[in-house]
Length: 88
Image (cartoon, rainbow, N blue to C red; front, side, top):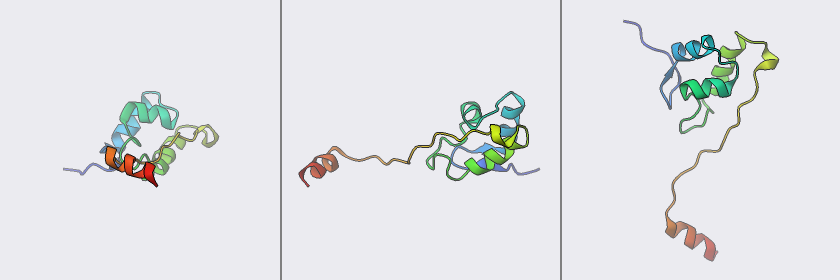
């Protein structure tokens, strides 16, 4: 039995799933993200974005691989932390 190679560890997206998304017509990082959730985990693609870009560039011209819109990871805070922060 062969182990799956996870490209996006946060969302447990395998190499096979990303390849299938590309075969299905994904031609941008956003297209892969929509089909597989790669890059939508806690790290917001900081771990897997480069690998996804490399995989995508094998099927498209490198200049056609558009950068993804990334967002900083967030953490939950309590209302008390917000209120205390206003006093400073």
